[in-house]
Length: 175
Image (cartoon, rainbow, N blue to C red):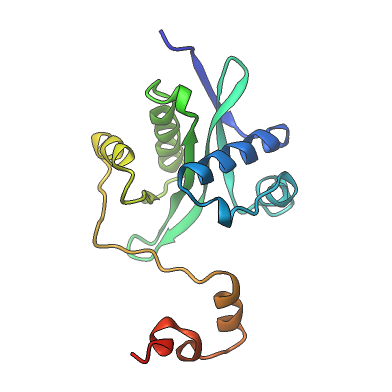
């Protein structure tokens, strides 16, 4: 029988464990080259005067082995806020123990309690285990939607008023 798990809201004392789990997630997703998170950088966004995100942690025998970091978004079509799950990670040794499902259920309950219209998250197209898991829970994987993102230098250039056509790949390639 797998060890019993507990789920609770993250506290400042969990910052180091959450950052370690984020690092493990980045390694799993082969995105460590993008990793900039530290406890000091994360702390104000979870526990500062104006937090922009929330986090649940999953513990087994007092050790934080999972996290779910989320924030409020908004649906113009529903005219309601929604809950957006940025990241959920369970250490490999604790997968298939029900902890991931329990975190998702907790978040769904939270969204309902707050009167939110939906609960969204993304999944990498190559993560077939996660896709099957989410579909089994009743989630609809929406392949027709694509994430658009400005970050780093591109974001700064765009914010400064540079015309994207001057620095976009299509301009470089003469398309």
